[in-house]
Length: 73
Image (cartoon, rainbow, N blue to C red):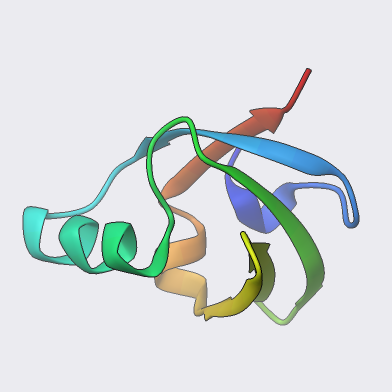
């Protein structure tokens, strides 16, 4: 499911990032890598705030619809 539809305060695993290489590289530098674990802290109006490792990342609607996640086991 896209991260924009993900449940809040649950650990999620990033399955795939469906963007161009430049954006994908930028997200990797922020810690959003394939098989990485993140937690959605808030989601409103398409913007999503995620906890990535020890920091927080805000994603706009365009990017948050292109990051596919699943619940971490």
